[in-house]
Image (cartoon, one colour):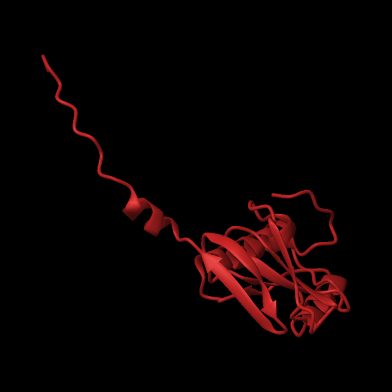
Length: 142
């Protein structure tokens, strides 16, 4: 992961991939797009930072894993405090730091024009399929 404080949402602070790109939309100067190799997130600097990020799509295997681990951690620690419950309810409507997990192998992302973003991906399966076949080596005496 990347060094972070307790101010970032949990899913982003524990993400194993470091962010490797920042993109800025000139139509919305208060928003930035931060991304890594398998994800990107929209950050609105005018809104407050939520406790937890919302994944998109919610059916992605990482999103299910985040939800499951969060529930298990809450059960281990005991019940929710009233303050934490209130903060989580307030976060339900906060779309800041929504993490997009739809793409894999992101090699480039940027804005072409106002409100027009391009994401270039090279999936690992495509790379593996382009590799040559393994060499056959004749073994003597075996």
